[in-house]
Amino acid sequence: MGGEAGRILGERGLFLGGLGVLLARFMSSPAQHALLRYCPDLFNYRRRPTREVRVGKVGIGGSNPIRVQSMLTSDTRDAEACVKEALGLVEVGCEIVRVTAQTRQIAENLEHIRAGLQAAGCDVPLVADIHFKPDAAMEAVKWVEKVRVNPGNYVDKKKFAVLEYTDEAYAEELVRIEEQFTPLVLECKRLGRAMRIGTNHGSLSDRIMNRYGDTPLGMVESALEFARIARRHDYHNFLFSMKASNPKVMIEAYRLLVAHLEAQGADWNYPIHLGVTEAGDGEDGRIKSAIGIGSLLADGIGDTVRVSLTEDAIFEIPVCYALVKPYNEGRPARASLVEVTDAVSYDPFSYERRASARMTVQGVDVGGGATVAVVTSRRKWEAVAHKLAGLGDYKPEIVIEDSGVVAVDPRDAAAVAAINADAEARLVTVADGLDLRVIPAFRLLAARLEARHAILLKDTLDGEAVAGGDEFVGNLLRAATNIGSLLCDGIGDAVIVNGEEAPGQSFRISYNILQAAGTRIFKTDYVACPSCGRTLFNLQSTTQKIRAATGHLKGVRIAVMGCIVNGPGEMADADFGYVGGAPGKINLYVGKTAVKFNIPEAEAVERLIDLIKEHDRWVEVPELVAV
Image 1 (cartoon, rainbow, N blue to C red):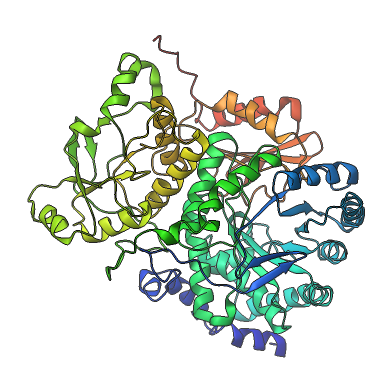
Image 2 (cartoon, rainbow, N blue to C red; image 1 turned 180 degrees about the vertical axis):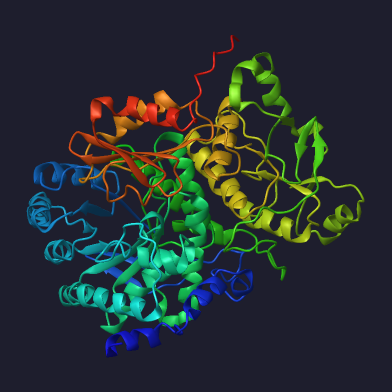
């Protein structure tokens, strides 16, 4: 084994004889998790302190507000279109603009995009999105303020190969990666450029996959390997991201990353970029993004955000601002302090639903592993009682006034003790009107309440909304952040959305949050990437066409991907995939295996339906019930 491989082997603390694999398994265990902390106080808000990273004129981290960014959907080779789209994004508040740069030749056109923006009097920082190609990165860094690299495919291998890496072979691969990554690090340092080391759940390299598996720990280690190289050259103007299309995976990965950074020492205080990749469109995309991004922001993690919607990029910006506004305004820090020493009832790094006893509430099973129920108020129930049969999968199931739920202030030790003294398991919730943030309030309730008691989650503690309240999207994002975050922590046996006044919309929000959190699957699930300059077909219209054809397939997960970069890897959890293979040509996948190639785009949706039928996952569209 060469000297460089030996040095890296020692740095990483790996041991011969396969102990590295055992170490990886141990690091994923609850015993190791007990030693990790990603947040100093899970009951009170404090933003994670970081160093500042400069991206042109924009500072990220440090004392800066949480920054908002997006990505161009225009072809990078069309400078005029890119400049026009970037100016439109800046006009609605985008602070950083990302552009794809697939090859060196395409990256050369970043010079003209930068020149066009300068001619228009715009100095918005540009970020080059790099996959696979070091020469593209070396060209792009001349013209942009920041480069994003994905450790899973930047000079690394992603062929889903089943290999066993010895520690020596693993270290030798890292030597090869360091040789090819170092020139970019040195050039970023020389030119004063920033970098994002951005891991994606679906594009972990074969090397990482075979040592750590398809896990949040693998995502973290993939990023840390590149960070160690940067630090060896005294380059620190970088930040991290840990994106996944599954909010649970995304949340766990970010938490684990921050915990490992904290464990490395105070000078590993790099900023964090937040995003749920391939979130999709419409309400589903917004809810999925709010669950992932919002839950981390609530714990003080996150210095810049991007909401990845399969829509025109300008529609991402208002969602970003809605998510970061409370934190940039300092609202969470003004809530009443919760002075407790209780440990939370869950492992923040590994999902497991909180145990509770099963009970029957108004004929509905609640707790004890039963499907999470949807609760509403009597007023809303009565408003829709005449058309319940026509509500399909969005029916309310329990009326809160008739449920026997016990509302309590979780800080009131005597009140909680009285519930725990009851021989009968109860349905319990946090009382309205308390000066507490929703997430910490329910965490405290779960920590103090005996596990046998079931918990009813709320989106707000302000009571039921009345006409003239907040606008719908704001209600949706707040509900998704508060309820979705708690569901991803394993807390919650029933949910109620009070903040949305309209009955039908409040029910829909409830069910869509349960679906996005992976808690209750009642419809087709879509993983759809946002469009960008790499996209090989119209993602927005195609996604809608696929939705129209397959939206009745409950429990089937379909990935719609514009190109191979975010194709098979990002479809790790999907049943079927529709991926751009070439202009006008589509490849179809089962799981992450391509099975049909170069299908003309005009035929591809029908061929996708045929593929679903071949695998016995197709059902006919049910007849509508007359109301």
